[in-house]
Image (cartoon, rainbow, N blue to C red):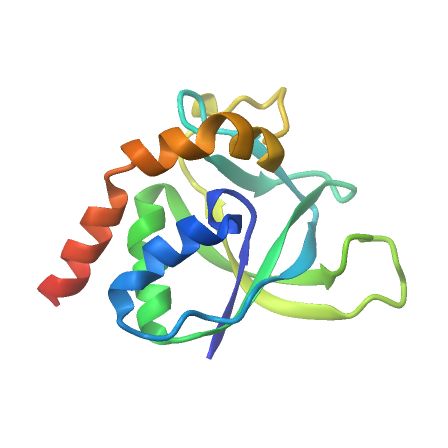
Length: 156
């Protein structure tokens, strides 16, 4: 079973469930709070979702570690993330304090932005609370990727 670190729209359980529903498999366990060190999270211009890119050593990205993912879950997440993201192996700090020397570390994959940085608001940090307040309903209503993920899954 695989582990993925999510840091954007997939933090929201409704979004994650919609993406993984086409697998026909049970939902994975709830995520654990985790921090990715040495990266930054920025809004993608004109979109409600963010991009994660390598940053300075002191950079951090808050998110969730999702464990127990099946190969079909990973395939659906790859389709959902598309060509603008690449899955990379990283080490996470579990919990909310990345500087806690006693914190447990965990390995996972994360989807890192590989699109042009000109499409990112590099002077801003993406906010999950702002996404929930201003972008979630629009994202759920307008994002056509769910149908595309389900169609791609059924075609195989």
